[in-house]
Image: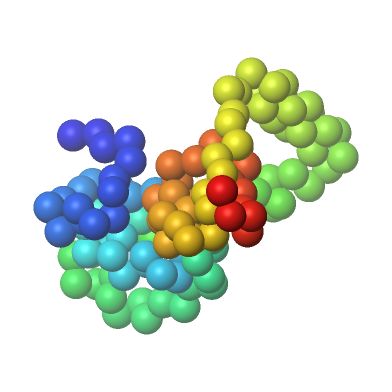
Length: 130
């Protein structure tokens, strides 16, 4: 079963995943491990909530495979970097983005949007009473 995105409050319902892509890092790393079944694969590619420090013995419980890469290692030459950057700019131009504005009283809702990756575009906190 493929799950595009998960509301993190529903994670307790998911188990035995074959692969988890974790771009959040520190805060959800252990949760990502818990989602995996026997011989599952964890692909760590970001540190949005902080740097991951991992006790490797946690991987042995279910024979978990951990993969981590850094994009900068794949962009070693100027030519490759310019090619990838050009393609990324073209892709970004096609995306529909929006600006979501939250009053400061709803800062928890705004942070939840960021944490759950539900926003594409700008997220703004307004300190002006409406």
